[in-house]
Length: 186
Image (cartoon, rainbow, N blue to C red; front, side):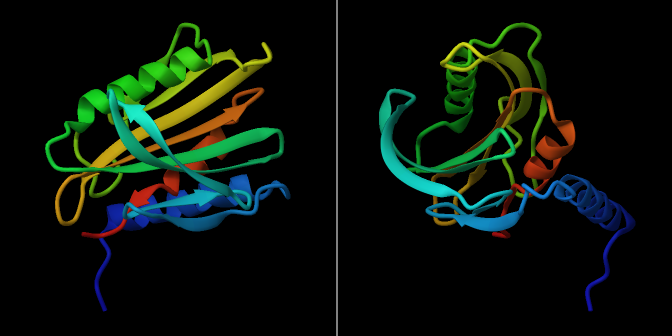
């Protein structure tokens, strides 16, 4: 039987506690999803809808898979894409962040910190961001979002963006959502 380091055990126990706290809300029914065409996994607190579409990511058409759901007055969404070899992921993550913040008319301050789940590339724009802004209907919205990338098995790069929108900040729910994002082992 493999041995776990104390830091691995502490992270696992901490994530379980956060999920337990967030799961106390009856509207949150967490489930793990695989996110093809990538090797990403994510937890969502409600049964998601899924759509695939071509978007101009970095000026080039890119197939994007989007899964998302709404529950308890909040919206949860995860987007993934697989890029062919030769496309640089960090500028794409930077542009994706700018577009997300502009779309919600985010005001200052925008809090940023690194976001590097296991097996992720250590990119400058692989970040967790928290901001406040407005929905399309003008109502106030609080958002927490992450962007990450990893080298794809067989070549190229996999990208992931996840976002949590709510009328007010809910750090315990956002923490549970983002703790469930991971890249499967290579």
